[in-house]
Image 1 (cartoon, each protein chain N blue to C red):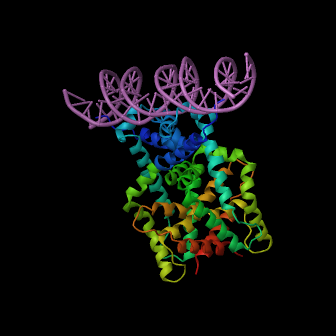
Image 2: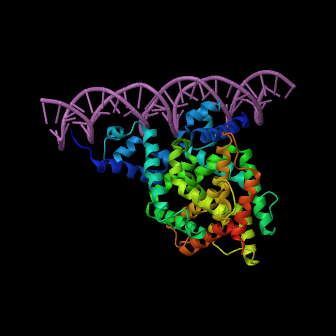
Length: 198
Length: 198
DNA sequence: CAAAAGTAAGTAAACGTTTGTTTACTTACT
DNA sequence: AGTAAGTAAACAAACGTTTACTTACTTTTG
């Protein structure tokens, strides 16, 4: 039996992310992807049932999976609050800085009904990631460090501004001056922390 | 000369927003839209040059335009800081609550390269909206009420969590219990304000 | 321990559909 | 009578996916 060529599988995934980032999810076609990855359309269908299956697996396994792993690096739910938040922000920012193409699909995950459905259906596995962050937050609520809010609200206050800042960061890479400096990022992180403290 | 049927124009726009919200931007086709709006494909092309032109005009004129107008209602750049932020939040939340379909395209505006390009090209007109918010922020920086940051960072801290909360709100309308209550929203708004205060 | 048999990976070309857009025509008003 | 709005039907191109075939490797066999 002829063995799989793992380079081809990898090329399919990474070129798909590149097309999505540069031309948008609505401009990704299977034929275009196959051509760009230097592969026959059929090759994509060996591993993936159809386009939907491909996009969902790309989104969940590739993007979310590696993002979650990166964000939790050297993070401990019992860290002091400010320190923990700074770690999460630093990890996420570094991750996207180094994986720009992942960011675009991540953003589509918030608007595309297809990916949204996939994200919800995954259910428990999402918890796998958010569990440490969740217990970090509950811990500090119990300790009286921060205000009590539903998990969704905590998450919005903690991470939403960061994603906006990353977006701005990328938009300024092609402009004369980067406004999202490390200093700005640190100041914003401090503001987020301060807002949550009791 | 036969006069325009304004109802048809309106149907095209509103049904497009509905399809985008329910099936995603990548599933909106001109033929599907024409059929759903009970109109010939040609009719769409009377007013719009092509699909791209249609989407950009839908996004800019329809969605952004009405959003900006709604958010600035009863807002004054010289309002006390906390009061001003609460007004902006309340306006934006009410607007999307009443115009759910607009929210989906707004989110696509952040990820789709097409709409992103349109948004940037509009340039000055975006300023038209953000100008009052911008001078509100500069005013309070000068007064020493809030910390100094680039405009982009202020905007991220102020509005990004709100959009996340609106998203959660919509996702919970189909579930047994709404977690994004007025109380939660108000608490989050307070946290955002507190974070920005000096 | 080579050569033949077996098999999944991979390809090129094509399938029927759907896409964005246009053509040729009709309608409803000034 | 004149004209832009609007329609039904069609266009080539592109779509997602499949068919028929070849390739490159593993395993079995003599």
